[in-house]
Length: 408
Image (cartoon, rainbow, N blue to C red; front, side):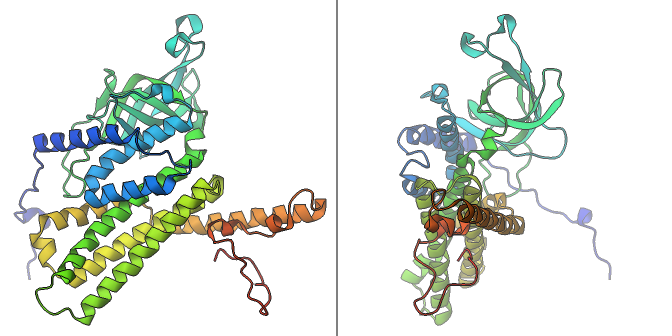
């Protein structure tokens, strides 16, 4: 039997989105981002659940729409956390570019300006970015961006540190690559390309490593997961509407599918709500914040994949072949949740939990050595992982204490 090589097969060309329609869509989303910026709370200031519910609602409306709005809101939160609200204007639109890729990294080099003054005529150092940054979404649409770069000294020698900077996209040294084919229908409007920087002036945000070590880094990652949840809900909506208005009797297979969706989405929503409470209570900073982010993102990403599978099995091939809106939702969700690192993040969560437990054990040992003045008994015996639990005792009357603290 002769099997044709793939190159011999007459594959039809992939559909190319209409550039004008994409531009209109992006512009409307960015306008909405400008409107929402002053209205929504910053994470960690008592209203995190409200913020994340809004992000979920945006994701349920349309994932590409939410994917355009979220970086603008994240950038505003980053500027707030850095104490640089002076950089915020009513007319700017923002992106955040922190991804790394193969090849030479984007470099940030300090340059002392004439007269020894920095931006705004203030004493200090200016910075210039040179190199290529991959995965820059909406590079040709936003006016400013928060971008991470590898720091060098004034001679261009790497220091081994990374730092966040603010750049303007209208500088002649800011050069987005030509748009290449985006085969998937998912997030097709979120045009993403590498950008070459040629001595682009940059305003630093925080010190070296501040961007990656601040509590808000984990909080922003959980905000993205809130959008994933909304996208998963929009996929599940199809089955709900079919069963609420059935064309034939609803059987137990359909009931089971609906029940599975409720359990899956309810669990994902609950972990987001718990995480929001932890953020606002000050219990989601440092490694605890990292654990929360890993837990939330893994839970929601797994929930999204479960929803796609359950809905597909329950509804058959029809929606995936004849319902453009459903196809868009599914493909966008599949692309978006690949920001999650799957089993690698699950392993990272396990490592983080054990490290936190070891830290708490060491703290308890120190407290036992130095006496009650250093640490209260309740604090000394509480495990790191209990920060997401309800705070109720784990012992059952008459059963004795568990032999060792566990996260659950």
